[in-house]
Image (cartoon, rainbow, N blue to C red; front, top):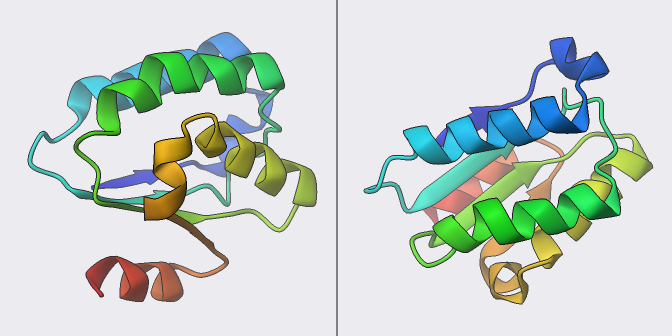
Length: 112
């Protein structure tokens, strides 16, 4: 399953982000075991409170079903770190989550 954040998200509020994440969970394919999340276009630093919200409301619903999650992270160090911290809110995800700078590398890891 793939999720892509686009550059059009530059003015996204925290509430908009929450809505997008809830839609993702709602459309989640229950048979999907591997995720590719392209975060390059997110254009948002995820604040700590929102990171915690994701852990409680999103990750907790998906964690038992996910075998692997590959994140393509932005070059902006603040955006990258906020994405990584969001995922680390659930310690279980650390073992099955990796971060990449290219779709090719992420895809290779997912299929390995």
